[in-house]
Picture 1 (tube, rainbow, N blue to C red):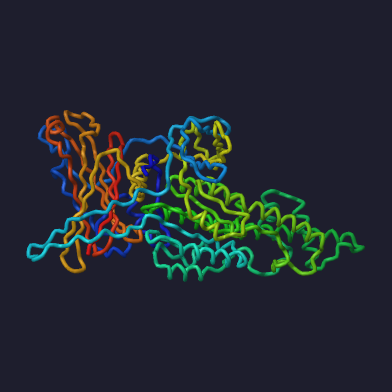
Picture 2 (picture 1 turned 90 degrees about the horizontal axis):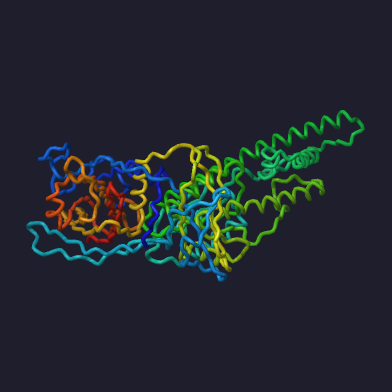
Length: 618
């Protein structure tokens, strides 16, 4: 699949393992090191040197100046127009995703105003499989027998993260969903890699094909709440009630909580002394207000932790070289005053080609307050009835963010169903087709305000459509150079084939010992079709050539970025570049299987090509 979407990607620190990747990717100053492929990338060593056609520096309009030179300084490109990307999935009455629509079939509205769809793509999840390479084994001078090229390795092409919301999950929901997840993991293919994460950050295990380790990680998952510590509360207070009291200023909810405070503390407001009754009621109101503030603070801490874990999980899976599936297992939660954080996650996921699939672990649930240990005994039945209504409203509100995350990223939302095995089958599978619509908001103000989005079909027939519901305007202008670096980075950490520029990828390896090897990535670029700009009598364009290695679990090992500056004479451009340009980059590696990724981009037209190759060094 060739994706024409070029999303942004910003990799930050996540679970310690991505610290080096973050430095490499954000700076795009890839470095060579001699570390074992199993180790995380180290940015401390100097980058490998390429072998360009010429190595003299191109500096001035001197007639004798070198026509080509390579260096490792970061490149800057032209300013890109900001696009708001909206992923949409259209399904037929049987629930199957369809991919036969075109741009004219869609309508897109921003705050009710129709928008021009400037970008349109029909995409299929996952990338093209890596092409098995037949690397040339360069034998030492004293070798008596040629090296034998082994069969190419099985390189992973699909990555699944199971993210359990152990901050909100209770045992009654956690245990059955954990067992269903284990049964689903047993069905994964040999080329699948799975990871098990939790929103508390405890017991995470990164991508692996070791089913025993995944089993152990699942067994370790336990509830880790912050808000409900299993202690009886007086008055009874939930995060939903606290939001209604503090943020929504609902006096009725405050009054119910105050009455509960009077009941659980044993104060009698029916006393013949009116002054004492009024004082007791005032104290109960203050107690209820204080309990609401405390519950809201703890609930906000819970949700910030969960949303932060979800954001980091999106970042982690966005640097995997293949199809990306994120499965969030949660009972849901409300997000008062945190809607912008949810939108940031959706924006990041859409631009990183990540679908957030959600399984509501409650299944077909019913509200039951009898097992709530945080309630005091001997409560007023009328108050219990009112609090039951609040609990029902809370359970319903918990679904909203789950549906928004799934709809906004084109994922699947499985809920109101107790068949968790079927649920995992659905949420761990991406739709066969989805659409990416892009538009440039007109007169967009950098005020950070929320914009409602609406995507419609001109002829809906019996189709159903799920799409992103809105976005927040930026508060500052994105740095163009950083944005372009992120676009190259996204292509590097994808497995999509791109063919704007004709390129060829080849590999060679040389073994200096039984456990040491040098792997050379050979990139051949046909530059005849590039657009050159005439400056001072020379034909000018720059090529950015990035190559990277991934191990058998899809983990980034190391990479290299080269800038090839071309200042060609007319004669050279017309008669001497028929065979193209070849660049070489070498990596010190251990024997084993690797995925090689090559990305080439030019500066003038911002064309980009990308290829993958799989090799095995015996």
